[in-house]
Length: 417
Image 1: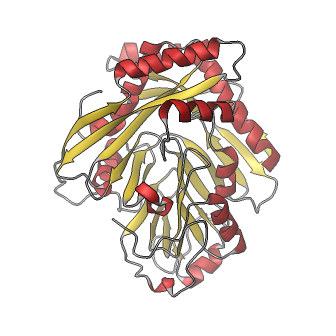
Image 2: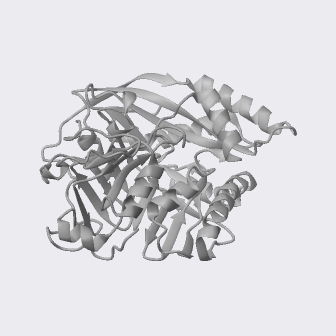
């Protein structure tokens, strides 16, 4: 699926009559988040530079920006100023539901990078580096990816609908990556992320970082013991501490009040236990938008490592370009009143204002538990990773990625890999 208007990169918009794009044009962004369900269609402009998108939003050039930030902040992002943005309460919209009967897709794994043995080797090598007193690294997140082929061709809409049905308590997203250009054209990122990078509602900012994980177990007694052990794990608590400290340091200058619990709680998804810390703050300057906040905190040590530059360089050398895995997917609005008047922004019905949404609001999710789908072929790539510290065990880290793959693989009827 390609957008109905030409992509404009580096933040420069075509000033022609792009507002004539049909408001009923194909949806290119759909995020059923924790606070709102947001659907975008049509394109006024697209940006591969998020700083330019933030500037355009601040100037009031556009009503909203939606899309994805790449993992590597030096790589192109995929952001769009949509013609129409609909913001509903959670559960109101039906866009993520598939028509009945649901199409049956048969999927197989056609490749892995690295192999299971290769991932163990990468973890062992990273542990050796982390144990070196001379290294600046304290933590690095290493991932592996699976290449998937489906018959008939998998569509972003179908995967999103299955993920929504199987993960009713997780935010679900689907976004077009075409604005990033290059080999991202006609590709979509689809996922069920358990992690809120940052959210803004009025003058309140919140985040819920997850770091430190253990696979779920079908036996309730074993499952409960895994949760207990995770909450007491010195290694995992230390790994989580890096993430919380980074978010605290990034958000504190932007807030006049910030609440950070001393200890994390243990939270669950269908396949994983995680250590999580809910962070809540009050913005010092209400002109700071959700997109500004996302750019201030991304990437966190939960997906990159610490210190950020050293970890990112290690990842790029070891894995190559991750693209949008470990990036962020979300939305941000500008002048709500102007958007409603122009018809560019609406609540559940045309002409109505979104409930509880003010200028600068938005939500950004960490792009994990996701797959990138090539709309031309239906082939997909999915990733899973984990934080590596000096005490990490290669077998345990491989098992963690296997468990994290289950979100996407289960949706496609594929066994563990």
